[in-house]
Length: 478
Image 1 (tube, one colour):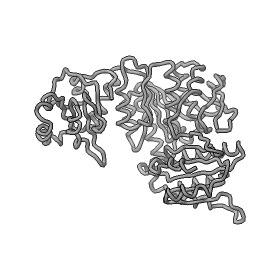
Image 2: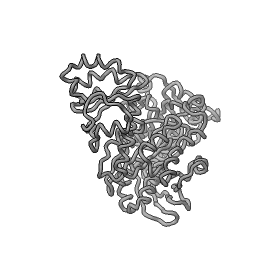
Image 3: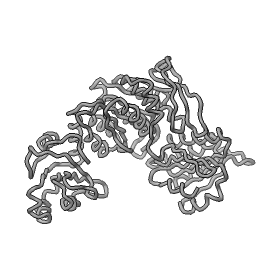
Image 4: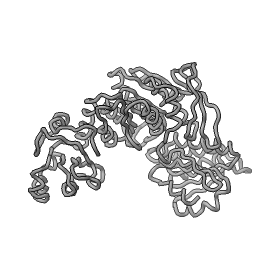
């Protein structure tokens, strides 16, 4: 990857408190790579360490591909001689080599200090659902007015955010980051890394319960961004209609602005018409004053909240209503998120990217809306929801009950955990009437082979499951 502006080794040593082993401190680095498989000539290699890999094992591979140098963790210093002999003196003597304690912290420290050189307005989006979509709306709107940089795709971890920060240059006005969370302290760290000015929490749901004891802990961890916002006199945007907003608001010490539906709050909306593919038109308001009518090009009522959040931040930054309307209306959301596909006589809702209890409910809502609008049969193909800890069986059963509540006609489940969705569908059924036909599969090949006998002409089909399920494979068999 290319860094927005060159960084001197002297700066890196100062920022990271590392030690230079070889090279001139006045030399500059402009290209960085964390992956030896794709490294190119002239890139500086940062070998990261994960649960199942150690990038130090690939230092020689990186050097043979033309890396101009590398950083290594001090615990590996006994390998320097081995690396030197294997690389050869001709290559070794030209290298920039740095020793540090932890390569990931090294990378984070570079990004943390780099963004502070240029001081763009920094926007961070987190939440249990809607992070990427809200970020995509913001990018589409703000790129029409400002010079922006942002986290692409779902680069929301320490590594992805660090890489994205380094794309900033002296002309960057705004940096937009999606901030992911798998444990306490992560949102605080990422918010501090990007020098956060504006925070957005889309909604709170039971995601990653494997790593938390309660929903209180999840809401508290999401609100960690308030700490730097308070210090910088920044602002936090909260979803007024989310069940955890009051809890969060009582915990934070920073300024709060709210967005939501049909309320006398800072920024709100009233939905209007919905087309046959679940895409809404809505009126955007600042308090009780109508700003503009907007068409949402993405299916799902819940996505109006994501659009409203992006519009709220944009209005706060004094972006005109017409640009907001154009930005949302022409936005391109990352693939496999509420993507509507017509295949023959069937309508498919491709929402395969990931799944949590809250996002599955939102997807079921959309399935219900589209099937009722078109007077067609509704079919939900659902895979396991992962990382839910001891609550997993209960949360899957609750999805089954929700399918009945929303009058979904057919359930096709995939995975061991998703059998509980079928069990939830059985609860409360009238013995004389089958409310939801249930089919449970553990084998993907068997599921795909059975689709022709289960699906009917003109069905509306939702496909959703956690990323590990690779539910998108089903698309080829419908």
